[in-house]
Amino acid sequence: MVAIQSQVIEVSVFQDRARVTRRGTLTPEVGAQQIEFADLPLMLVPDSVRASGRGTANAVLLGVNTRRTYFSETPSGNARALEQQLEQLQDQDTALADQAASVDVQLNFVRTLAAQAAEQLARGIALGRAQMEQGTALLQFTQEQLTQAQSRAREIAQQRRELARQIAKVTNDLNSIRSSRPRERYATTVEVEVKQAGDLTLDLTYIVNGAAWQALYDVRANVEGDTPSVQWSYLAQVTNSTGEDWNDVALTLSTARPALTTISPELTPWYLDRYVQPQPAPAPRMARSAAAFAPLSSELLADDSFPTQAAPVMGMYSEEAHVSGEGSAVTFKPPQRVTVPSDGSPHKVNITTLELKPKLDYLSVPKLVQSAYRRATITNTSDFLLLAGNANLFVGGDFVGTMPVKLVAPNEEFEFNLGVDDRVYVERKLMAREVDKRLIGDRRRVRVGYEIELRNLRTQPIVLELHDQLPVARHEQIKVKLESADPKSNEQSELNELTWNLTLAPNEHRFVRFDFTIEHPTSFTVTDMP
Image (cartoon, rainbow, N blue to C red):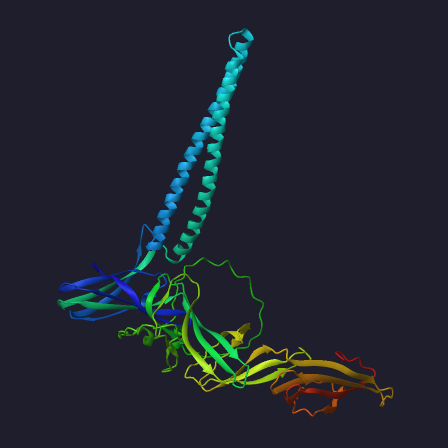
């Protein structure tokens, strides 16, 4: 068996998985050969492995076999380095523990020696066989020995605490790597028959779980002046938890969902039957179940093409990804090669930057918020499909917030909120609430009036869409009627929502007033009255 040195050269990331292409080159001998691609990730789908090749060697592909392999050490350079570092730290801690044990023996010896010597010295002094100077020297000797031993014990304890922190950090780093790169991997053997010697380049393509991407946007709006503009940065947030790093690869982002491409939904009969009280079920037996992978599209698995090298990026500018809408999915191919390590953290890849022209107006619903929201209406004039995702919004260099973006097709119009503009003043007041003293039969009538004050403090005219509402009667004997509106509303919906389309000149001050009546029987207590 011949081991081939290979590396990941191309990755196509889908919504919930990725297709990886590895490439390696060797010069095989004439005859039947088994060429092994080792150290493949455990997230690999074995049934998806395909091989293809080309070169000056005349070779025939006979078969592909994928199996699990096991290791005594973690098959990762970073993990092995961390394991060696952990072993060194643990050896240092063991050595310090031995030194601490020796210091404990020394301390016990000095304490025992001091106790016995003090007893014998006291007897000697009492019998006249010893002098006080001897006792002073003995006391000084034992004190020096105890001080040195205790100082050494404190140093060892401090060093072991520092080692414990380092061991905990290395252990956590190692566990995070081991979780994605355990001591077992996949290996694929490609069987070929070489009829003529030469160079042979093999590509191994396979599907891996643990990868995904989603759209992310940075929107910078310049709304001041006569020509407002929006810079729309289209990003992809890619996550890789497959167990193998993607270093300097050609990346393709696809909206295809392989798990659904080959399965058509079918309805099953909808039965109605008499309910029968279920009987207690026996305790279930524990059974082993085999994991089933979703069927994979043959279009995703068969790819004999060889990607070309992308042109190097020059200068600090953003290149535009190539977008393709062929078939049922949309794919984006960033021109730059990217690196995405298998750490599970999000990595951003630039797709393109769009320059869009917005149409600005204002929206206000003073019953809910007494403010005016600046709104931009934009037409997607690019060839890019804007996928659903989140957008970070900046207005004039200030971060406004995060907003959701729905799916937007090319040439489709959409709108988004640019935040509150404090230079447009809005205030809503209850101006009238009167109950008629005269009863019409057994019915009571209540008159209600609201006034909305509007002020445009900007130096340019604005277009404002104003919304308010009347109550909606949910009982046939409750009647709600709009008596007057000044100015007259442009629209009144079936649910009594009023809409005004107003144009306010610079520094214009305007009032909008509407009055309505509510009639109901005197025997009724009406909920949610104004």
